[in-house]
Length: 252
Image (cartoon, rainbow, N blue to C red; front, side, top):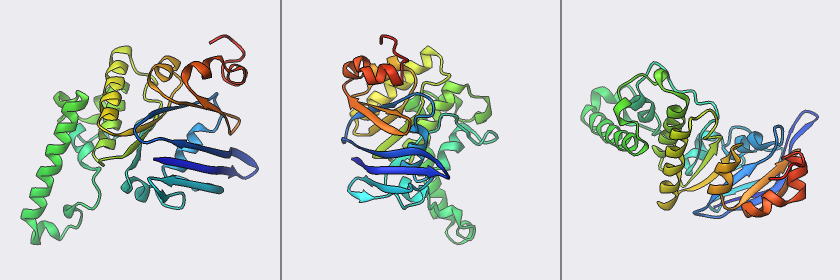
């Protein structure tokens, strides 16, 4: 589904990502871990098209995407969420999801006059889809509430919901468990598993090791911008390089 070939990203004299290569198999839930400053978030930004790599290639579903802007990357079916969600706080939760589909007929103001019926029909379809997704992620009761009132965990669910509005093939999840209470975290994990069973591939950055080790196969480890290793969770937990670089030499 996803292949990185010697991806490097420099910021002036700083090399944030240093020749990283790995593949993500279709239908998997893969984890990406590493200490702070390892280059994980920079790599996510490269994959999502937010920034271009200095060198190397990113292949998604058989097509090179590393030179595409982020809106083109998402249109190919590769979506991402953010560690710190930033919804449109004054809009309802439902409206935040309805904004996602691109190229809506009503985006051209003259269509509201000359193609009013088509605009209304499309809006109904999008609203129905958004409500179905809110039902799935457990937020339908908050559909008409302003997004600014949601808790951190609920906002993480909204992030997943917005990604689903684009019918993704693969989702990059940036710390879905950060700042989330255990009840909502369990709900998020349950939805990830269900979506994976429906065919969506996931790559997850996360500092919650219980989440990564129980959910992800394989686990990819970065340190100082480089790929350190990848493997099964049990192998990662006992690898001396990981203990030194990520866990400070402490037993897993």
